Amino acid sequence: MKSFEAAFFDSLLGLPHDEAQSRLLSRGFAVKSELLEPRKPPLGDTLRVIGVRLLEDGVVKLIYANFRTKVV
Image (cartoon, rainbow, N blue to C red; front, side):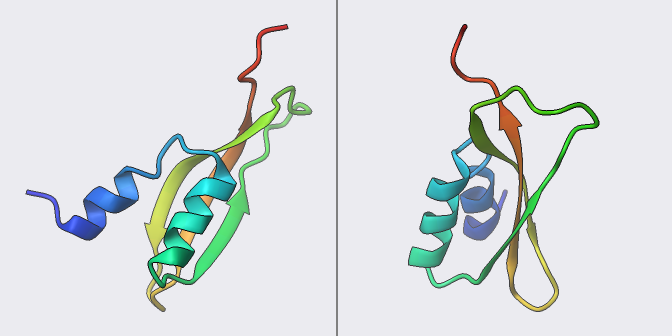
């Protein structure tokens, strides 16, 4: 069974970066963000969380990428 903290971190996956960051800050976590950039220029329009890591110093690292969420 997952701990509450692990389940909470999993619930952040797929959220827009700003929303995930604000949820963590409201619960008292310090947040560090890292943009995962593709080799080609991104065509996306939304920053989404693709990974969450708890670092040794207690800081939560959000890994996010640019996704196309609007059909053109």
